[in-house]
Length: 318
Ligand SMILES: Cc1ncc(COP(=O)(O)O)c(C=O)c1O
Image 1: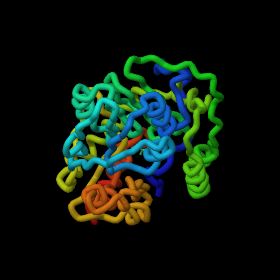
Image 2 (image 1 turned 135 degrees about the vertical axis):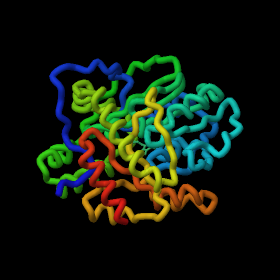
Image 3 (image 1 turned 120 degrees about the vertical axis):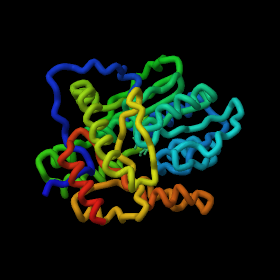
């Protein structure tokens, strides 16, 4: 049985360039490095961020010793209340599962450049005229890469060298060696760190030779297929605005929790977003429950109805 989900494999490339616009000087090796750069430029006196996030986001904040506070979110994946920001303070808004473009657009009109948008889960979304960054390896079979967007579209001139990430895990998965590939994938994830290097030439080439339109379409179709089948059991009701949302996954929060390990044992590799939330304190109950019970079902371009049906069948017998 073919497994579904988990780390990506090497991509099949188109002969033609897709014309996706970005400049090398805009690129960083990963999302945390782009956030580090944004914070260095903005020099906020404090940053507010949702408690439902991974520790990687905290790395640049801790490195720059910026005071921070967590903010609660609700079951629409929106802030319970926006913090009352001073002009020198910023809020990090996460585009959860690539589905919160409309909400971030809305709050960007209130907060302007005091909002930093984390599009790590939303490659296709806009920066809404404020600071934003993404993380390419969350969407595609690449080992690194993040694009930083500035409010006025300007790009600092950088003379830094290019990142040289490991790519063996992508090749191994492509050749069916999933177990060894997974081991190397985990090692490459551990090596992700804040760096001033530009995105590797490898990722840059791949990004320019993907069919971004068909990848977008496949994700949306798979997502809608799962919505039709699973929304009756889902406590999260996140709709998609196809004007600017392209889902990372289908976030499934079943009324009767199903352990992640049950999916893994059945060859459905769903990630855990994010077990570090369990240590954020009793105040963040919703965030800890979500991190334990949310099942991010894969909808990416490797899959179509066949795999969606397999996941639906598995869930319906739980
Ligand atoms: C919401 C979110 N923001 C930022 C990051 C950091 O991205 P990267 O791993 O590319 O540094 C991650 C992932 O680790 C993430 O899940």
